[in-house]
Amino acid sequence: MNDTTSPRQPYRRSARDWVVDSLMFVIALGFGLLGAISVPGDPPPPPKPELFTIADQLIALAGCAALWWRRRWPFGIAVTLVVLSAFFPLVGGAMLAALFSLCVHRPPKVGLCVLGLSFLASLVNVVLHPEPHAPFLVMFLLSAVFQGAVAGWGISVQHRRQLFASLRERAVHAEAEARLRAEQAQHQVRESIAREIHDVLGHRLSLLSVHAGALEYRPEAPAEEVARSAKVIRESAHQALQDLREVIGVLRAPVGELPQPTLADLAELVAEARDAGVGVECAEEYLGPVPERTGRTVYRIVQEALTNTRKHAPGADTSIRLSGGAGEGLTVEVVNGPTGDDPRTAPSKGEGRGLVGLAERVSLASGRLEYGPTDDGGWRLTAWLPWSA
Image 1 (cartoon, rainbow, N blue to C red):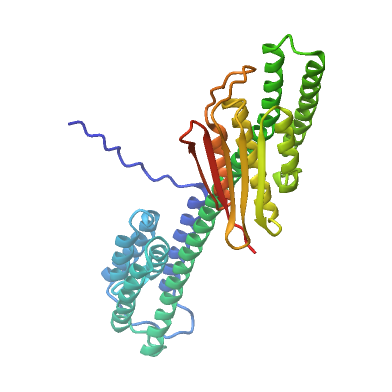
Image 2 (image 1 turned 180 degrees about the vertical axis):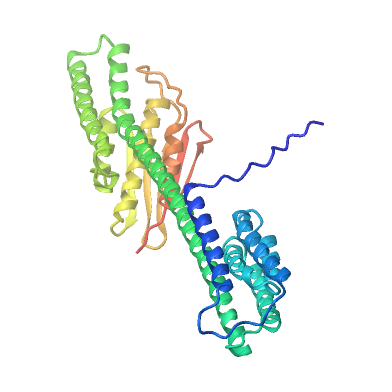
């Protein structure tokens, strides 16, 4: 079995890291030098063995050098320097730098535990190396304040970095969500364009198909009938171009700004179907004014039903019935009989996209749509739409 584990990548310092590490080294070294220099006028400290003094200086220098690796091993270096600071005072500067780095790069719980250890180390240091010109408690509290301030500073830096990272991540997520919403809005606009084109142009083109079929299958028709069919074809083609211009307007304006049909336009729609030779009976048995959105959906339902009748059952009689009222909803039922004997055109085969789009439109209006064949070979389409009072 081959080992696919990639080797650990070496840590590479950036220019900023070099500057920060150099400052840390210099500050820790300066802190140790200040501890080694005696201020004139102060009482001399108790004499210490020369070997201890040399060891204190060497360990302080080694502690300052160890700060260059504090990012890689923050916990180990911090604990080691804290323990050494209990016995060797000059390493205190390097210990503070390591404690700060630990609180920046590790969880606050770890930093606070090492801070507690540093308090104990300070207590041991004050006991082993008392200052003749300062009380014991003052020196311990001063050391504890320094260490607490450094640890608190490190924890605050860590929290600030986490806040910036969280804000950056939120910005990335917000950008991704905005892009997704834009794509969804674009998809909805495309669906609206496709739905409007199907509803509007499908109705007009079906009229053209009926009358063109009449001219094709009845070339011996009287001149008056031919002229009437040609007029209907011309008017339908002109109206189709007008409708197409209105629908394409959705590319330049929101869908809600486009002129939309209402229930009042239903009579004109039925009249156009009758002019095309379809026997249509319309019964309106509802009470009260129909809401605008509901009326627009009813118009589209009847329009799609009549279009399908002309395409799939030419010559069949069709009945439309609207019933209901405020509070109980509005029911739309369109029923056509079997295909008649009119030889002007043959039933066409569609892909059912109109009914799929119609079902989606009814669903968006919080309604229900049912359709299917009848026992006599015809077709029934029934829709229920909510009607708020």
